[in-house]
Length: 504
Image 1 (spheres, rainbow, N blue to C red):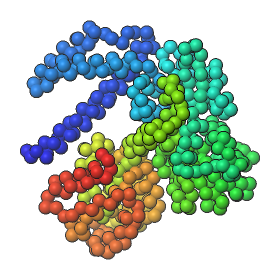
Image 2: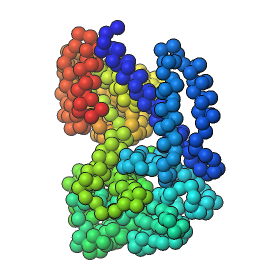
Image 3: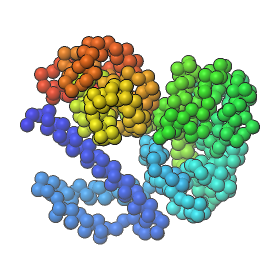
């Protein structure tokens, strides 16, 4: 076996080890949390000794001599992890929260977990003793404000608390770091509300923090529009046509219902900036429209990271004044979270190697791989070629969009698209909303035409000329690869190039 192949295998083994270690440390954190809740000691030397003995017996012959040494170190690290101060995010249902990931990147001085509680469990959370504090999300921000003994100015003004800390005096202190997060998000994108007429879409808990921040930043006027308000989403064009900054505080457009638009931004001719608190998908349909209209735009992920930074400083008892070093930390965490959320989407001509490259990228990155053509066959029970032959290309393209609208807004995947995904403009949003898009550009001589009815009917050159402009304009990265004598040569060159371009 060649050295390059052995290195690929050891890279995959290392990836699996890291995934297993991450899972183990997360379980260890949960065990530590359970021990705190039940009053048990973290260290159990008899159990650790017995565990090492059993694992040594189970180990393979290559690893057996080292298992004892390895697990003594793993248990030492696990104890250290469990003994750190414990913080959490409190909410009713938090299946997809990014908060533990963000806080672990901001600091290693505490561990951070998820506390899902119904209303009956809130009182126990506020008794203290287990958690040093916690963040609060929907629907408990107002409940948290009512339960805290001391409120910050922002929390008092908004009536909402998203950060709770138990201090040495035994009291619960409540803060609203959403205000800071929103201000930071606007400043990061050079959006200045000073002297402007601002329109807030929605009137929930997040909207209160946004209003407070806008007024603190010098907004001349702040107006709300909500479904049941006097100014609603139907009459807002007449009542507030001169809005200069619009902020979406509704869940409209959030994954998985990514097609929603709460208002039509084209009907606000004086609007120069649009901010959306939604962070999944990374680019909502309204954000994309605002960009097309030439507005300054800001998405919700930066707010999420920035508010977490301030909460983290409060948890640690540190100064919340921000300097350039801390701004760089926020940027670094933002980029890391964004990278983990964003799909890697491959577009390009039929037969250029998208599926082959996608499978290799999946192995390298540990991301799930989805081939849209295979997904099409799974959903409709026939291949793309079969549909085109029996019902025509137009019918296939409609069905392809149906599949694309469900798959492409997912997060953290490697996705290979059919060569003609770019022929319908409606697909542009789905391709780009939550993805880094890679155009795999190959010489036309290497492209396959067999069992591809459209290519066979029109010819490779004609198809390429029809699609080239969209491949270019829809993509973030162009990966240009020559013809290779063997598949491994192509994969090696393409993956090395993409690793550099994507920072993998």
